[in-house]
Length: 383
Ligand code: FES
Ligand SMILES: [Fe+2]
Image (cartoon, rainbow, N blue to C red; front, side):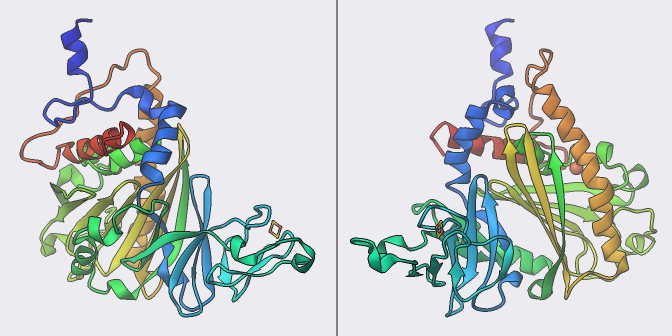
């Protein structure tokens, strides 16, 4: 192979020149280790829904790679987060979710206030020089964002609100009853692919008519294939334009996007937030979905869908749309991302060209490049 040919296949920060990231970036444990430090431990990570923390003492746990964290409301109702690790010998303080006014470790019963201070440790009075003030829970940054809790292990990271721009306002503009949404179900998937392939797939619709023929309707007639894409630094925004209402109203049960004619959400809206969370609002009544991925290994990913409906589970028509995504569309995506993952080991795959077009049309892979460039720069220390 000539050097020119090699160069043409290389990843480039220039979208008009770039191939995909090197294949090894999708299986090399050293790359995942670098991403862990440079991306996962420096970015805002989705931890859960604020709906699950209605009052003081309510808590839930979340796992950011190998870091277990507790997110809770303290006695004043303020949001706080801690590493879920006892300051004595390290047992996890709590599991799952619940409500407690004192957090007691299940190993030797050290107990902590909701502000993280150690309140009691058995036999402490007989231990030389023991100072309870040295053994509080270690706090982590947490922010409320769009009725969700995000945590960040990096004390120097900019606030989420500063990097997310008008993303929250965009949710509220698109989803009129955003503040009345309630998580009604969580769907889980274990996927045999690197986490980046799952996100890359989310960030383009080049594949949509091929992989999800029904989404665009028969011969793409149901949904206009007008993928509008915009990259805004740490997040991207995409819209799949639905047909005019008279066509929507003819929707039958066979269509994957069920929507109520006259519903407040006219189009399919998809947003990506760096690095590993995406959001979806479907046409119809107010609804929302958090699409969250977490690497479980260099070549495996755990994906969670947190589904929100207005005041609880949506009515049958909208629920059918969530179910169709869970049972059919998402499996179509999982099929392709797992196939791509296998290709990363193929001696026959040299890395293809990202199909970025200057107009950022619905077929452009511009958002994939934008994401890959952020990964590239973070891992190479320039992010
Ligand atoms: S490890 Fe928690 S009390 Fe000992
Ligand atoms: Fe897809």
